[in-house]
Image (cartoon, rainbow over all chains, first blue to last red; front, side):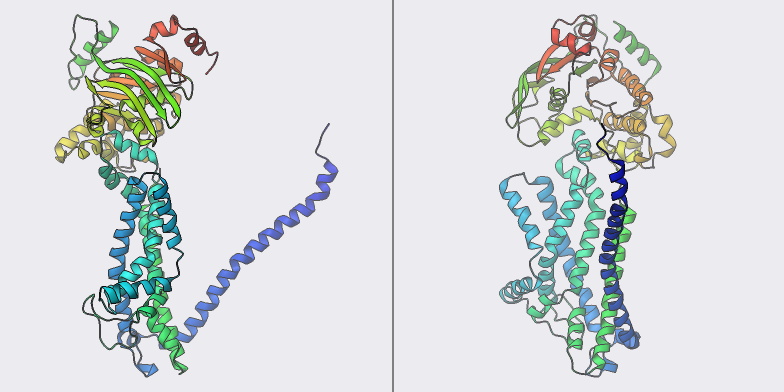
Length: 292
Length: 278
């Protein structure tokens, strides 16, 4: 006795195939939605901003005349910001990840810590801004400096780096550690010679993506109250500064229509920086990925 | 004593082999003396009152069905079992007359005397050279010339020098599975161990690679004491001097391999080696 009824199978076949096609279309539309949005955004920004984008735009300070307005202070300020954020967040983040993955015992307290680091990644950036204002700007007295903003941004992206680094470390197969321990290596030798070299591509990729989030983040800078119109460049981490997203935000809210175009030109600069950073991340991932 | 004749032959033809001490006395030196070893994984009683002596320059095979504790026992011999959280042990394992289960015995020191080869070949994603030099380097050898010599000696020792001598700087992952496993054996030889533990070293290999590893084990026992866990009873019969049969965490029978396979005293051993279970 056969349970499969040929007639029924044939009858349902066209319906099943139609469903198959329908779902494919739905998923394709979902993908297109993001792509089309990005395309429209890029088109509008480029058509509006391209006219204002020239060498003077990169080398001039901010100005109340749209034609003279430049992004120099913000671009250099953002680079200074990254110079603080990158080492602080990567050292703290990777250190935390190594501790949690390689040293911490599997117990309730450590599970709680792990869970809360993931939760921390979801805290809104403005909350980190308020934290930075209270601790770094006021309590430590760093003022509206690069240091205060950099430390705040580091806190903001720290959870993202920790989680990325944890995943990269966890992806290193255990047999690699066993091979190292099996020859009498200490835990530290195993970490520095086996685990980290294998995890570095993943760690760097995650870190760069986190840094590119920091470079575009505005809310914490607004809360800290960093200025927007600066006619000088920072000289140390204690200097006041401005950053790309702040500058763009300031231009975008001005009443003169020309400043909208200047803002668009600023966005192009910011997005170029982001694309470069993301490309580096992709390059590192492809170049240094180990296979097992 | 077939073993000793082989040893003399190898010593004569291969000057790198340490001359073996040939004594009239047939009683061999004990390397490991396990006394009343019990082990628990959490609540699970993994090893039950294991008493076992492992002798110098012999191949000791450990056989038994899956989950019988044979790998666990092997991993207690270099305390690798401690990597599993919630493991507890009681009893003693005397290695060269020192109790390795005592807290005063640094596990890093133990593992420089006791090398290990794993079930799945696990070279590092580094060059062949760096794989072999890993052990010596962690123990502080920096001199390039010394490292070169160790690498060559170890690769020769693992019978893979001729296959890889022209590509020492290539990634070890470019090699076949069988070659990778012999690289892992060479890597283990590079720390100049006293004992080599092998955890089913051929279970992931094809028959020809398996044969090469088995031949290698025969050569290595002239200089090293080898403990090998295997699923393959023919392999145990072919290569080992002594065999221990484990069942549910207990040593059912431990004797010279010929006796175990031809004349087992315990019914369970007979059932297992004749393929009635396991």
